[in-house]
Image (cartoon, rainbow, N blue to C red; front, side):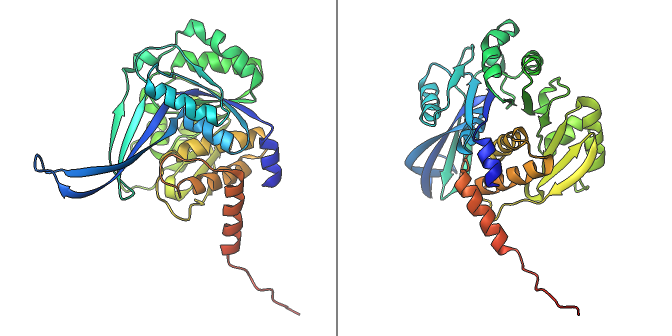
Length: 334
């Protein structure tokens, strides 16, 4: 693990996608409003963190690599605040052309339980990039990076044209390309190095709708996704069931979850694609990369809110995991 982290520290990853500001309202509720049957929240304080593609970039930087992020930062207080969070982590930002407001997700949290979420965003077409501007925006950035992650949150920035043009530029410079897809938008892509859908997204990509409570149809899903999209590596994140690995349409191993305690799964997918991309670009095999990413995600879900993991936290987590495993006594058979 230390050797892998040392290689990761030499990498630079460009993240392109839907950046957003995560806003948390922390408070308590001890009474019901006289105006409606709803709790009254006494707000104690606010916190802010980077979400979406910006959180992917934060995870890359937190794991010791260099990160850059490109997305729409509105000319508003939220855009300035989000840019400031990234700047303080040493992450250069590229604001893509568009109109409207910075995407903000506000979560109301009462006694560490999320009560509701409020989303602020503009219509998706306002975040799209003119295809003719893609090369001018990204050619130099891709050439300077070791890998590109396309982080799609279905907000409108990631389009068929953008994927095709970014992938073409990456292939020209022999760069790794990963995608975290949102298949409800039916984007077109083929032959990427890595895609990381979750359970629901994998079923949508495969065009399957199993009946409730049926087992996850692993073989069918992997075969269909490979036939349609031809990814070099497919990693399906299965929540508490871990990660399913697949290459060439065949079901590989399932890596059990590394989480000890789960407080919040927000951003776990961001951690997974960041860690998988870094490990694969550091010459790890798919199984080694998945163990690395699984451990990283296991740390993150033990924190509240969108979060990141550091190398020190990761090594400590793995050390605790090793100590908790039962030891087999040696037996003399002579």
